[in-house]
Image (cartoon, rainbow, N blue to C red; front, side):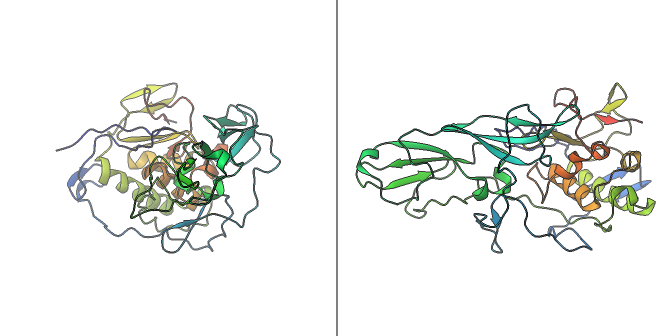
Amino acid sequence: MNQRIFCIVTALALTAACMNETPIGSTSPDPDAGADVQIPVDPTPGPMPDTGTSPPVTHHYAVKNQDGSYSCNTNFTDPCANVAIEHNQECGLPVGTVCDAKTGLETTPCTCQVGNGKNVWSCIGGITTRPDCPTVIPTDGASCTDDLRGIGCEYLKPLSCSCPGDIRDIKPRYVSCSCDFKTSKWKCSTPGWVHTESNPTFSLTQCLTPDPVIPQGPMVDATKAVSAMTDAEVETWCRWSYDLQRERSGLPHPEPMGQVDGYGFGWGGGTFCSGTLNYCLTQVPLNDCKRLLKRKPCGAKVKQLSNCFLTAFTGCTPVEEGCGPMASDPECRETLVQFSPMSSPEVGCLVPLN
């Protein structure tokens, strides 16, 4: 039986969902294929095929180790250094970049967003540290001075120690440290972690947002520009994304359920993401996917297109660079992932019809 689930991802409530979900492995009539199709199940997700060389780490967030854990990033050039950051003011950094604005004792996370005609900073929330607290987060278990006994201090975890999935929200980066009155030692924790006998030591690089399970990418040259894809490659890419969405949410409607100002909405299941970027992904028929990829000369690489799709598809946690490269190119903002400010969970994910 089909389930109808509607989901929204917000900056302070990290939940992802879909609408009109069909169980994986079920058989559904596919009007694009012309016959019943057995939806395959691949329990072993793999890396995205890439004919190019993976670039070195250039971001300023925590670095993932081979065992799946994270370490603070100590080898990077800080893109936020010497940058003026103010809410709703122009941003000259790549779209999706997160920086912390510091004013006195207050630290506020800000994200470079797509604006009207220019990119702007979006700053939400903030943490204010007491003036008598240490200026940097104390080491858990370290001694604290007598004058701080019984005092609690609040901090925002440094971006260099924050997992990529946690940077979109202030909650996973919140750190509270208190100077224990009896032992005169610091005890630090986050909302999702507390001291226990089996887990006695707090670490800055503990992640609250789990890494998403990333499906294997399409068999298309990942180094090509989207605008340079052949008809066969566009067919392959669209079939790949179409099948992934169909496995989760069933088949899209052949026509949109509604239209507004040359945009359609309501084909099928959708995901809305906000925080680092505001964008949405909705199901469309296979032929509409091919139309959208050819509609404008998108200069982003196929890998960036795929990473953006997978970011939205797997719950909005950035896959590699996430959707920043697609949002940064005006010709790439209306492919399969939509960046229109008119889209909303109330209106729907708006997709251009022409």
